[in-house]
Image 1 (tube, rainbow, N blue to C red):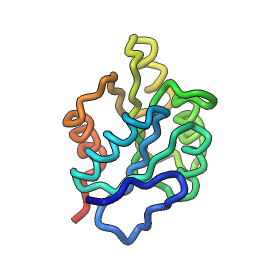
Image 2 (image 1 turned 180 degrees about the horizontal axis):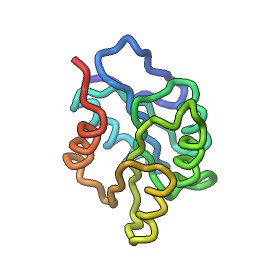
Image 3 (image 1 turned 90 degrees about the vertical axis):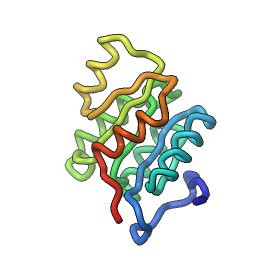
Image 4 (image 1 turned 180 degrees about the vertical axis):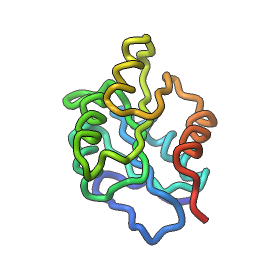
Length: 139
C-alpha cells in the first residue's frame, strides 16, 4: 500500500496513476478519501487548508482535486474559484465535498467551476465512481 503524502511530499509524474489532491481540514476524512483513491489506482497528495491547496495545485498540477467546502481560512469555494480563474489551473477538475447540501450551496460550487458535488458523509464507492468518470486511471 502506498503511504499517504502530506503537504511536504510532492508526488512525481513517473508513478503509475493520475494524481488526486485531497483537501479537507478533517484529517480522518482526508485520510479515508486518499486511501480509497489509492486503492482504486490513483496517487494522492493531501492538504489541510485552502491556502496550502492552492500552493500544491500550482506546484504539482494534480490531475483532479477533491475539495472540502467548509474549511478555516480560505474555503473550498474560494479555492475552486481561484483555480478556475487561473488559465494554468482552470482545466483541473474539482469534486466538492460538503456537509452543506442546499440547492444554493450546490449551485455556488458549480458556478465557481466544480464538476461534481457530493454531500458528506461521502460514500467512498460513489466518490471513486465520480473520480473515475472524470479521470480514468492510467495503465
